[in-house]
Image (cartoon, rainbow, N blue to C red; front, top):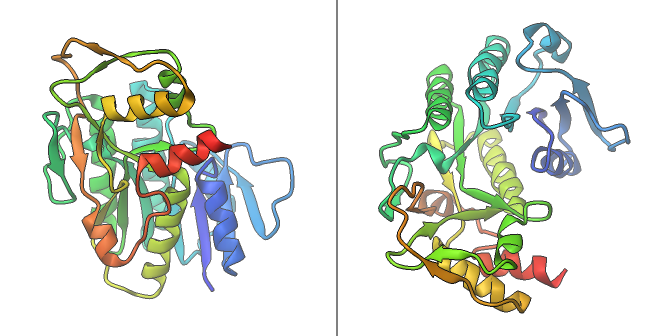
Length: 277
């Protein structure tokens, strides 16, 4: 069993910590404000990656580290604090240790409904996504064993924005098609645990994996289906938004070829369960 450091123990990091601890790994979770209640077999350390001196208590005896940190807000300062200063501080201490780095499909600048995969150009126009992309490049340059995982839009318990939207009879672009991509947060945990297992087994991994479900679907179809399931009126069609971004279709074939099987392969599977609950 391995000694694993999880940097960022929120809605994905904490379930992942429990998953790995249940497998017998020694798990340390870094969090600015660790939970007050006890979590069996998980050691928590209070630290802020943007403050290098707070990382001293971590030591350097880990076999792998997993970076799952989100910016506090959508400001340039927040993103620089995490993806520049914070990442630099972590790499200064753990550059020799292989890692899994959680990124985002926002690094793709495609906006005309194109299919994208790990080999597609990642040239985002907005600054925050550029900072994430620069962090990816820093990670892959730091250690050839490092792996970047690009998650699409995460949903699940506590991340129910589209359910709230569907209940409000929103105006949604119907034509031309505006595609959306998503992944259930349980699959986020599953993908990271799966890739970690492959890494610990010394399996040759690609530097980047795109993690999104099997069903990149038009937003019109998603909201219409949700409204129907909830018993609300269908959305109304709105004029074309000429400035719409993030209109792309994410291909997950590389991850599936490696052997990962999605728990929720479609929004109907994941949101259907949320609605039934």
